[in-house]
Image (cartoon, rainbow, N blue to C red; front, side, top):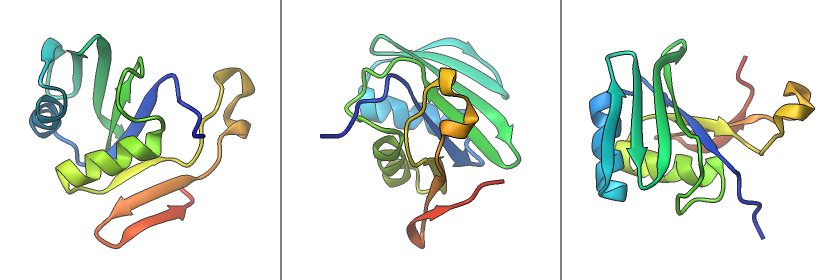
Length: 123
């Protein structure tokens, strides 16, 4: 059985607030704007806080579900759904980690794009 992550985070190549909000609306039907700007967004989505940092890492935006009340157990499951709905490169951690364990406990990364789904090192 797959471990259910307490929160989920993925990185989207050139993610835009409008496209991501549209995808969230199509996926959950209940999205409320809490604070929205061109750089940072905070939405309420069916009892979850969802945050978008448009310029998190070079050309990538971070999409973080602070509480995992989603249909997905892991970052990878979320990444697959987001790639299917947004058709842009998605990156995510290949495993869960505990903040108390530090970065050393985190594994590698998985990239989803038009070439498929592949592990890689993101440095």
